[in-house]
Length: 459
Image 1 (cartoon, rainbow, N blue to C red):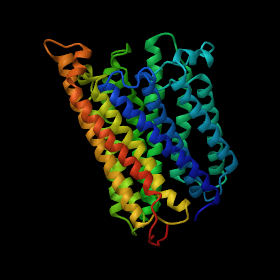
Image 2 (image 1 turned 120 degrees about the horizontal axis):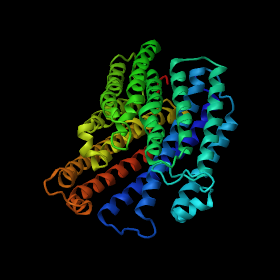
Image 3 (image 1 turned 180 degrees about the vertical axis):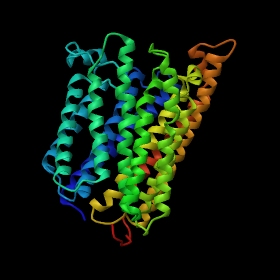
Image 4 (image 1 turned 180 degrees about the horizontal axis):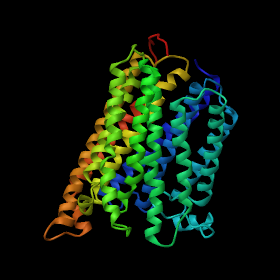
């Protein structure tokens, strides 16, 4: 059954994809700046391009999560959204605030932006991924709390399911851990210690709960497998994620001045972090194999299966490659880290948001699935983006291995910049793979505008 208030998810999905396009454009700019150092300088310095690239990633994923919650929660609770008007108001507030912040990065020197936005009153700027000005951070908290109020009230007045409770737990955790972005101690060790409470406990903690809930919801819809079976899998996955993810934060404490015991704790528990992603892969394929019906939205099924596989490879395998302290001693801060980051974010969070959008958008537009022709185009976009991301990861991994050898292991270690010159071939290949990814994203966008015959089936 569909609910009228689920329609508020559509603008969130549209904004998410638009910001995703912007993120990739700035990623391509950064890739060229690795090769051509003064490309677009001084108009867009590398540090500004990087801020925009990473901030757009976070913001568009948050738009995706919020849209997914507005779509899922009414259906799980079997009741209309508590306040659709509040949801639309928050959309415009968040979009305007995000756009203003990005324009601030691009048009105003960062130090001037800090002075203009009250950083002298409460210093929160200048930290990686948390570069947002104070008013933006406050705005994020206000939007998050109003959003959580809306979906929590919806859940309270309707049916309570394991999927909606796990989703709510993840979203509340997202909001709570973001509060540590306001805590900026003078001591650099303490700063980095708590900084990871936002960055790590988001992407390797509470976001995994959101990922599990979104994937479980779509799999119930496209496979017809009993809810009880899927919910049992979900409990196992989130337990593994929380046990390994929370203490696994220690793998970021190896070399920042924290006590030495974190090398053991961080190594042991982060070595367990691939388990929830492996379980997620088995979960997705098992559910699809046990499906009771053929859903007409083949593209959404493909995205769901791809999410499990790519999350396991990116977050699990590539994370494990350099997570043990004796290995990380040589690899931390190298291009191996970038390889892991790119595939992990794409596999775990980008793909699950695209899965939900792929499933929900046709229904929001009044049909069970896009036309056969549109789905073929969408599946082409899946393969273009996914294969491109595999190549990006492989090229960055090769660059990282060579970087570690030349700069940190060799008997005659080279300087950082001399090492970068030796990696140029890999940077060129990474850039061309990035262009391929961008083409795949444009094909994904185009797939929603293709008309044709639609197979009828129960959504």
